[in-house]
Image 1 (tube, chains in turn red, cyan):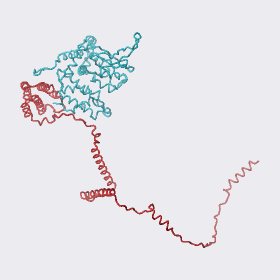
Image 2 (tube, chains in turn purple, cyan):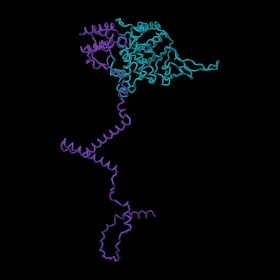
Image 3 (tube, rainbow over the protein chains, first blue to last red):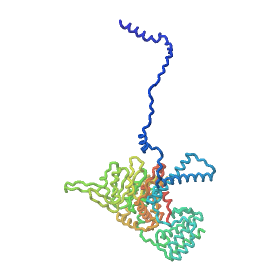
Image 4 (cartoon, each protein chain N blue to C red):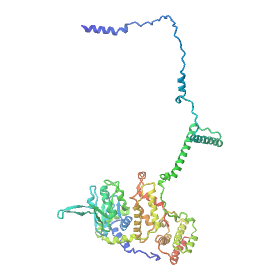
Length: 258
Length: 325
């Protein structure tokens, strides 16, 4: 019994906005203006002179620049700053003299400053480390040989040696061992001059021997190589008589080559 | 010498004869591999242990066995397997109920010529058992030290590391081998010769005919002779420079050790003796540099990835050093 009445009531409520007429704008009537006069008494107030004096003497409220006397430390940094500024002014004048008027951007100028500053810092650190005995470059030199083996008989300049004179000098002091060595080196130089071998200091004697294609040349060179090796590597003693015998092999080799 | 100018200071005739006989015996069975055989003989004369590496089927084990057979000494062989234990090699103490005490049972390491086949099939734990005996020629077990008999030489074979079921040997152990001899594939002519010999059943017959050429005592005596060969100071400097260069070379992560320097000089002496000289030359040094260094050095990772071989780097190293003249 109540259900149809409830539905009807709900429909009536929902359809309210549909059937309702639009509201008309309200017209407000101007209200009468009332003027109110403030009749209260005005008192002129002043700052408390005692409080003002107290605040004036309080250093916490003293905002003016404190012009204290410069200490030596301040003067030093002032000098550094002057030098720094003067340096950059000098750089600017130098650039202007060299290239005319050069306009460097602010960022480029800053970058240049930073680079130079870093270089200066690096130099100072390096000098201090050297004075302290610390080798900062050790890690850079890690891949390089640390210990140099004492051996100074490099023959890279074989073509610059005056062999005839050197052999004569060796024979004068009866250093036959050295003379045999020089004879052999001269033989290598002759082979190199004749383009029969490619002279390189890291090659062994057998490497040169293998480069010779002529059988007779190989035979003669193998003989003098053997003489040299026995004397120079084998440390076999050589006197004047045995040197003459050895020298004859070298002379044969020289004549056959020429 | 041929020219008659210089008389040999050291009598190398016995050594030369023995080497020729061993080479002749091996040449009946082994086709080619002259350089490998020279290195094997030189390694034994230099009192070193030798690692023989090669792919399966290139007669590594056969060559080692023949070399061992050429020497009349106690020969033992161990086949390395993944489950091998140190006590299987060195020996162990066993309780004897009769004497109520522990008795040491010697392992197969106690011999003169020890052939370790496929050495890199055993893990590092087992390899470590060889450290002391290879370097100091002694075994210490239960606080007791047992000296090895002279001569004592380890001949080990291995497949290349990248092959299935193989391990890389520890660096400390590799450094104890004087040479790593690489056995290559035979050439076409050598392959034909191998097939012909096998077809004519010559190999099996001649394998039985191999007779010992030298006794253990003679080997020890020859080693002493080789040790006393003359070495000029400039040659020592040359060797030192080569080893130093390996330590500073950019292609190498690990260079040669002082043991490598010693091995080069010892091996060069043996090669000089085989060549009939009682002094060493830069050629002797150059001949042994690669076999001595190739297993001791370690390439940098980038060089390994580029496929550069240790021998190539060693050749570059040697090329940087001036030959003393």
